Amino acid sequence: MAKTSSGYSLAQILLHWAIAALIVFQYAGHEAIVEFVELVGITAASSGEVPTMARAHVLVGILIGALMVIRVILRFVSGTPALPKEETPMMKLLAHATHFTLYAALFLMPMSGMAAWFGQVETALVAHNVLKIVLLAFVALHVAAALYHQLILKNHLIKRMMKPE
Image (tube, rainbow, N blue to C red; front, side):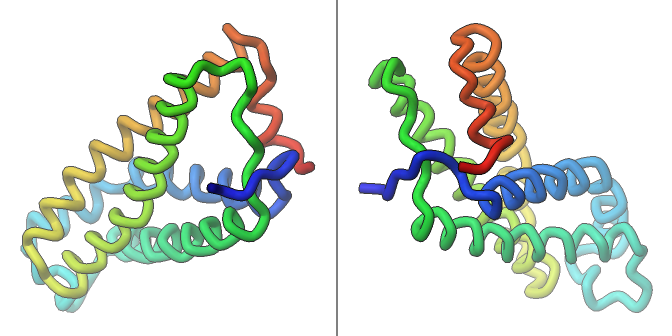
């Protein structure tokens, strides 16, 4: 069973928002790498001139992977707050499944991206493109659930990710 705490630590909160911002950057600027790979092909990494935004996409992806490793370590060391007591078993199951899928996608995206970019593995590129959609869908679900808790249930669940305990 996962370790529980009264709230998220400052480090956990900063990592959450830093990774969220980096994901926005990745989606907002992904066209540069898409265009470059379409132009050069799967061997894009070995090309002489890599556009700055394509290079940034690769480096930020690696950074997200590294931050996720730190985030998981902190999760085991510091724990996480328990889900609200009033949540139904189905809501708790959905929360755990959503978080698991988000974490998995945030590990698999950098891994598949690196395998595609550095290893020139075509299957990894396909997986990366599928994971892009999975991640986007689960981020949307995560945001919708947070807003549901804040605006409908009014249980101030969002506060846990804003103020360290």
